[in-house]
Amino acid sequence: MAKQRELRVTRQRERGTRAASGPVSAELIEREAIRLFGERTYPVVGMRDISDAVGILPGSLYVHINSKEDLLIKIVERGIRSYLDAIAPIAESEQSATIRLREAIKAHMLVLATALEQTRVSFHQWTYLSSEHKERVILMRQRYEELFSRILNDGISSGEFRDLSNPRIAVLALIGMLNSATEWYSPTGPLSPEALSEVLADNALIGLQK
Image (tube, one colour):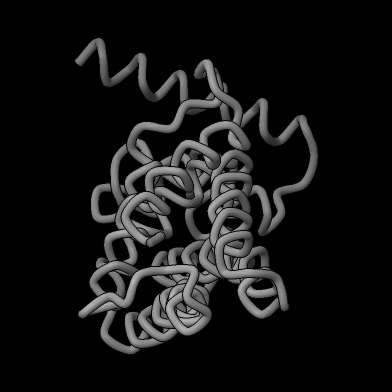
């Protein structure tokens, strides 16, 4: 009981702090939702948890969002779109496939470094969405895969990369390597995102180049 009272007091103080800091915005709600989903996962977090985090009553959340799932789909789509926007110009450029692959991996790591928590939610919690929303996310994930497929297939056509029997498996392995960085990347680690991207690119190219 004592812990519950302490938690209520803490939430009340947080609401007071939020209210004093200025009006609640959709951006603040989204930011706090990312934090909460990352800490506890989407199914565990309730609307009251989000409202407590931003300092308003649960009913007032609906002024800014339609539902908790609406909040999650916005977080997921914005998170994936940030990677598409960063990597698409590289994949579609006229540079060599080797350079494009290095630059695409670097772009991925730079986005990850600036949006680590959102990426974790976007990449790993989209499966909690309803079927309709899942379909939208799957299309975006397919687009992400296609960008790397384009680079890989161009490299095979140009002779930079080996003639792989199943290029898609190589693409999925590469994407799996990048996506797993959400689990081990640390902003306080010894290597910068740029340095890490070089290491990852070196490892990827070892398996691709002739």
